[in-house]
Every structure is written in C-alpha cells, then in structure tokens.
Image (cartoon, rainbow, N blue to C red; front, side):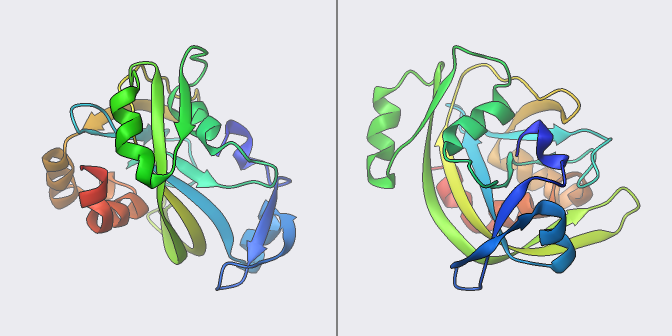
Amino acid sequence: MSQSSENNAEMLYYYNEKGDVLGSAPRKEIHDRGLINKHVAYLITNCRNQLLLQLRSQNKKDNPGVWDKPGGHVLIGEQDLAREFLEEMCHELPDISAEIVPIEKFKHAIRQTDLGGKAILTKVKTILNFESIRRRSDGTHVKEIVHVDLFVGKYDGPLSAQPNEVEKISPFSRQDLITLIEKNPEQVGPDTVKYFKQFASKIFE
C-alpha cells in the first residue's frame, strides 16, 4: 500500500477460503504460489458526493495510466488503516487526519467533523475470495483471489499524490464514472469497476 509496496521482501499473511490465517510469507512468494492474501480498498467521496480516484503512474507494473481506487495489500504489522489512507491520498500533508469509526456511528461522525481537515472512514464489508484483476502495460491481465476489507468514507480537504506512484487525484460524480466506464472502460481499474457496480448505493449515500 505504501511506496515501498513494490518490495518483494515485504511480508504478508496468507489465508484459507474461510478467512483464517494459515501463515506468512514474502509478498513475491505469496504471488508465485497463488496464495490468498488480504487487501484493503477505500471508496471515499467528498462533500459534493464525488468519488476520489487516483490516476496511476504510467510506470506502474499493474494498472498503469488508469483511474483506480486507493488501497492494496495489507502488510504484516499494518494496524492503522486510516493512516494508510492518508499516505495514499494526503501524502506529506501533516495537518490532515483520518479516523475509522463503526458503521453505526458513521453518519453522526460525518456531521460532527470538519471534513476539510479530517477523513471519516468505516468498513462496510469484508469480501472473501474476491477475484482481483489487474491490467498490464502489454494488455494482458493478472487475476488473484484475495480477501478485501472494503471501506467507504467522507473527506473534503486537500489531496496530495504519492510521487512516482500516482500522477494525480481527481473527483468523479456518479454519472461521470458511469460515462467513463461505458465509453472508455480500459481507463478505469477492473476492481474499481466491480466495486462501483456492486456498492454504488453505499459509496454515494
């Protein structure tokens, strides 16, 4: 999830189909063996109900040059997933904070929070055995079965992309995203398309 996430030595847990931890291994071994690992996905809207997406760098191995949700692998030792959101969307903006709240407190927290300086997130679902699909620059696709913790949230403050990882971050209305997917589906990450189609009502509440 961080800039160093390309490092093959990073350690991940791997799981069975029911979501039980079976052990741990380096990221490269996890992928080489096709083991199930844990991902996180953030679907965050601003106060104009626009979804915040990243335009991934053309230099990225997976999904280069496409609009995609923030998120990725959950590495061993990563406990503060709110901090991970900040690293991806508010890179080096020290005055911005984020908090994960229970879903039953989500709407109240939004009303009570200055969303210009703090993001409020909540986990809406753990998706077991999600088929993650990523495009490569040569047009081929890579498929991986993962367990996903899916978060939605609200944030209306400044945005800052990670250098060399993301070219820019932009907001998309629900209709803008529908139009982009219909006319240029290759410009949106396949997983983001899946999340949007399945969870649009929760994203754009």
